[in-house]
Length: 357
Image (cartoon, rainbow, N blue to C red; front, top):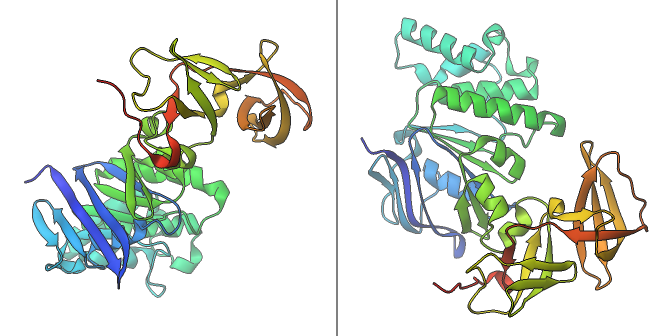
C-alpha cells in the first residue's frame, strides 16, 4: 500500500472558461493533517471538491493510494473514493438522532459491529451521552462533532473538512480547533482542512499550503511560513507585520529608516541592492535605547499585549507589540529600534530574490 494517501500532479480546475485552480501539485502521507489556507475566492474549496470527486479536473492528475481517480478524461465518482467529508453546514439529517446520523455510513456492518463502532466514535468526539438527541437539540460545536463522527465512522482513507468553524462563535474557535486537532490525531485520520483562518491552520495542521488566485504560493509548516515567507503575499497573509524598504550596503548591512541590520554571511541577494524587509511586531522595540523617533498612530489592546502602529518620519508605518501594562497614547512620540536576527527580504511584486551560490 502506498505511503502517499493523496497525490496531486499539476491539477487545474475550471468553471467554463474560467480557470479557478492552476497547476497545483502536492502529496499527503498517511496520518498527516494538512491545511489549504487562503482568502475567500482563492480556489481552496474548489480544489477540495475536486479531490472529493464533485468537480472534474481540466488538467493534471489526482491519485488516492496510487489509484488514479481524476484526470481530464477520468472521474471516479465521489462515492467510490472512500473519502469522508465534513461540510461547512455539517449536513446532518434533522429527523435522525445523533446515533442514527453517525451510524448512517455503517450499513454494511453487522448490528454488533455497528454498535461497537458507534460507541467508539461517540466516545472519541466526547458525545456518548448525546446519542439519543436530535441535531436541533445540540449546540453548534456539538453538531460539528457529530458531523465529524459521522465522517470518520466508516474509517475512510481520507477526511476532507471545509471551513469547520465558519458557523461558530469566534470565542469558541480556538478551543474547538484544539479539540478537533486532538480528535483527528487520536483517530489517526489522514486529513485535509480548508480554512481562511491562519490560527485554525496553525493549531491543527502539520503542513500548510497557502493559495492565492488558484495558485499555490508556498508549502510548509507554520514556523516556516511565519519566519520565512516565500513572497509578499504570504508575508502579509501569515501573521501580522509591516514591510519596510531597505538598501543593501557594500559593508553587508541593510540600511532602513529604523537603523541598520547586519546581514548574515552569504545572504545578500545577487540581483538587487534595494529590497523590502518584513518586520514582525516583536522585532520593533519601543524603549529608551531607540534611535529613531516614531509617532503612535494606532493602538489595539489584545488582552495579553498591546499592538501599536508607529509612523516614522519617512511616512512608513511599522507595528510594535508591548506588554499589556505598557500604555502609550495615540499621538505620543516614542523611540524605536530594530531587534532582528534573521531578516526576511522581499522583492517587489512577488518577484524572487536570487542569491549567489
